[in-house]
Amino acid sequence: MLVTGASSGIGLAVVSLLRTAGHDVVLASRSAEALERAVAVSAGEGATLPVVADVSSAAEVRDLVDRAAAWAAGRGRALTGVVHCPAVLAYGRVEDVPDEVLDRALAVSLGGTVNVARTALRHWSGRGEVGSLVVVGSLLGEVTVPGMGGYATAKWGVHGLVRTLQQENRGRAARARVSLVVPGGVDTPVYEQAGTYLGRHGSAPPPVVSPHRVARAAVRCLERPRRRVSVGPANALTRLGFLLVPPVYDLLVGPLARAFALGRRADDGPGNVLAPVPEKERLRG
Image (cartoon, rainbow, N blue to C red; front, side, top):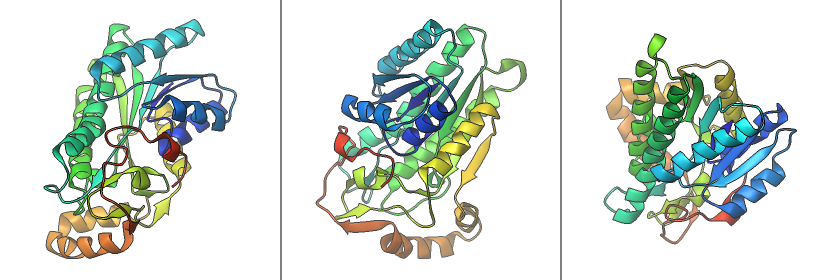
């Protein structure tokens, strides 16, 4: 199995569950230091191969998949599943987030998903195999929140990509079984790691679920693929409000986001968007 974004949050929880089940796991992340720590804290019998890779680079993703497949083959196995988790974000009005920060966030969160998905599909297609691809999306791929425009743009793109892949991989044309996991607020460090141009850190919007709950949904999709799995008790209601009563949603979402999705005061800056911050990578927020 290959897990991208494996050194923190949901990805790290996926690694732990897979290893506990006895699977060998290739862990990919931008930071060697964070990967080393992830291998140490994830328990289980499955062997691990940490690989430093930036998913926004198509070349690095090709090398990652090649290494993962070769390592699996050397252990008498095959690369049968990929769980894609990485995302970076910067809080702020769209026009206030610096160009390089917004461009980089889109390159990682959306471009990285494209790179991983098409490389995995090409790998399985070239071998006449059908693998399992699980993509971790977000409730913000189905609704929007002011101050998170870059993240919503990326996640709406991710959801559109996954739906297209599901359409293209039907019947005899299938190269993969493609699943989308849609979490709401999750207790991970992604909000603290994020860049901000609002003068405040982000925080997980309630109701908050554990990273292991999302990871369990992702691992189940590897075994029994599903088109879409929502993880979060308020997801359905939030989505319904966004679709059915947009004026009311738009009136309420700003004040609610300021009250519940922003934390303590912080200096403006890019967070981990431009480069990893290994000391902030961990399972929970």
